[in-house]
Structure formats: structure tokens, C-alpha cells
Image (cartoon, rainbow, N blue to C red):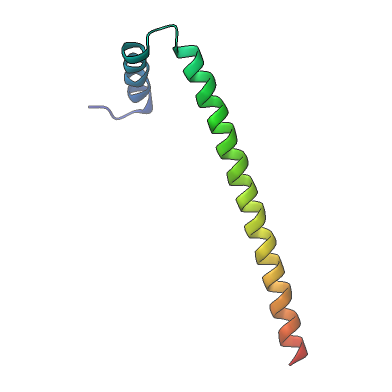
Length: 68
């Protein structure tokens, strides 16, 4: 029935108009865009920290094995 993303998007827009009215849609879209941007920044920061920890752990383990 609702197989594609487009179908869900249309339903979400119609539901948004029914619940919030057409005047609130731009505000909701703006808020959603900002939230997605913050989520992406947070995800990139976590990925960067994980890479840094993995690099530090691999350097530490290679130093430990060389000392023994």
C-alpha cells in the first residue's frame, strides 16, 4: 500500500496541515531542518571521536607490544 517514501511524505504533509494549519508548516520545516543539522553535526563529532580513540588504542597497543 505505502511502499515508497513519497507516499509517506505526502501523508506526513497532509497530516501536518490538518494538525497545525498551513501557517505553521514553514516553521515546522525550519525546525526540522535545524534539528537534522544538529543531529548530523553530533553524529560527525561522535564518529570523529571514535576514530581518534581507535587510533589512540592502536598506537597504545603497538607501543605496549613493542615494550614487552
